[in-house]
Length: 163
View 1: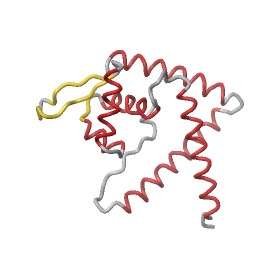
View 2 (view 1 turned 45 degrees about the horizontal axis):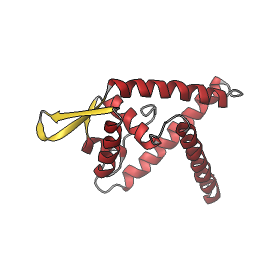
View 3 (view 1 turned 90 degrees about the horizontal axis):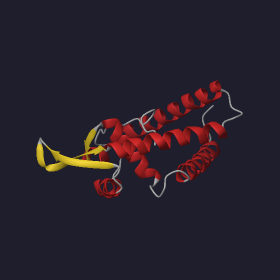
View 4 (view 1 turned 180 degrees about the vertical axis):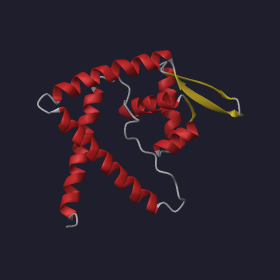
């Protein structure tokens, strides 16, 4: 039986609610750094060094968004940059030692908060939800790639972004 419009509407409402809850949870521990900036910091850490244009493409945002967020992170001492040796006009962003420490601290705090919130869940239930979320993400990426006239490549964030 096909999925109904009502079920899809319910799904979007739940995803929006979950997004607000995640933002509130992360906001409790972020000390004035936005969730999107923390996610970007985490992505830079997983990539090592990256050009802002590459990061913008990966995250599906404009390079000006990445530049502004990297400037905030750099001002906070969480990222640094150096000239790209292959193109002296470009810069490579990287996570500083302070940034890596901050991410580790925030991840530890987040794990504690989420573990407390899931006190009555089993490990199997959490893993089952993760599998369903991966399936949902892959379905969204598949549809996005089919409708992308440029033939762009989807970038799965499953298991990659840990901010």
